[in-house]
Length: 220
Image (cartoon, rainbow, N blue to C red):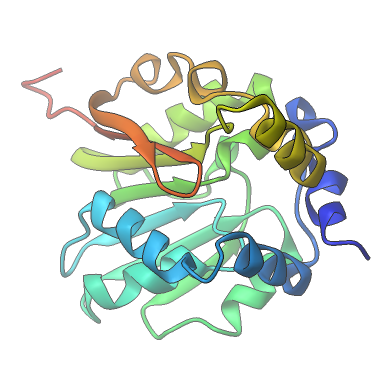
């Protein structure tokens, strides 16, 4: 199967959502796509999330578990990282590579199967565009619900190349996933869910981040 189809199969109708169900092909695709710098890029994402020893972390749309495996040693064995993805194939792949303080669950961002206020940190990298557009507000409300007051959120998404030719070429490979800018994709979803935005901006490898917190009751 052509690598481009790893994305096209789930992204042709991005507003309707979809899953990636071929983890090995996906891993090959992203390894090539990051030009050997995947570890460096995801280490920077982990640093932006500001994980701390002993914290409970949720990775929404964890895919093959790459970011959660980067976060796991930072929260130390006293902490825990839970990855969630709608694709059983991706979750199975992640489980087989999980360190001792990681676990993985099949589920959707718009229906998180976790108690209120059960995490210190929620991260979601390159996953929001997979959630059906009508379900994205609920997904952000769910992330707010499972965070403790004062807990932190990091959303990372694609940003399209600025040049027309580059944008066309990337679109041929990835389908709709990188045809929308972060402002169009995220809009006001994060503050509308109750979060307070702390920072946002461009990242390397054609990505964009928004970092936010769930306010303490006195700050709300």
